[in-house]
Image 1 (tube, rainbow, N blue to C red):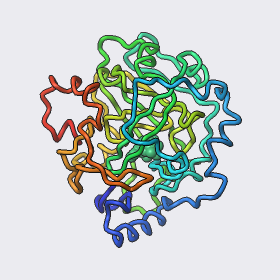
Image 2: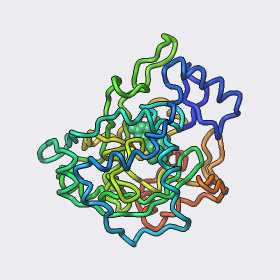
Image 3: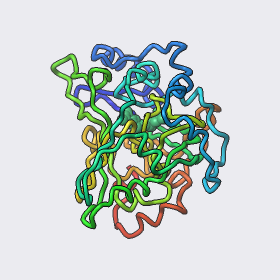
Length: 329
Ligand code: MTE
């Protein structure tokens, strides 16, 4: 996520920020305890080390669902393990080592709000109850870089079925864990002049989006349980939306009749909206969305409407009558 200097706090990304501004910013963030984590050898093979102890390891690699095809090669796993946005663990892309502090078992997921009966379920029970498959998806960050990832997990519609929402439910609000003890990014800022960030990370989707065939709850990647820095043990993948909608390390799904206000929308409402559908014709207020840098090759390729998933999702938005700055930001 790319943030400019506003509200006395900021979260940097070098690729869309002039370098001098970026480095200046990083000094501020380091002062706040949000600087880069040092990457050691241990963090680079994380998913292997973690996978050995995972109670669902026997389910991997999951059978690939061939419906979802890519138009470019899969991004190398190593790259994906080392280049992450997970602000709970720092404001740079190098948070892999810091993220290893996240305890992911036991991991309880709460289903509440407008459902027949609220309940809490352990991640392993949830995974075994629903089962998993593999899908190859494109992943386009709002910062204008992209990847292609072999995710494992299950359709979000299956979780909706399990939750049994009432007819009053129109949206699902999701929350990430909140534990400043292990996540340095969630600690209160050191300087009194800097604003407090609205933790925990929150995201939301409409019920129609949640039921769309593409909405995928991720439990694994690259044929094994998903690595902590990529959002273990449960994250979302919404491939037609900018990556910030794909919330990591989810602990709660609340069914509601109110449109949720996300983490980024709370911080920068003029830059990040609820829908955040990929559209090359609608620029971010501070940079173009017309093309993207493919991680690995660094090739710049044109960005596609709905990130190439027009056929599956365009129908969700035709009758909403919303202007582009609402649908595509
Ligand atoms: N979820 C949480 N909880 N915290 C975050 O900082 N970053 C988002 C999203 N989900 C984020 C998050 C952003 S901006 C992106 S682009 C993707 O995660 C990055 O996922 P990746 O690291 O697997 O590429």
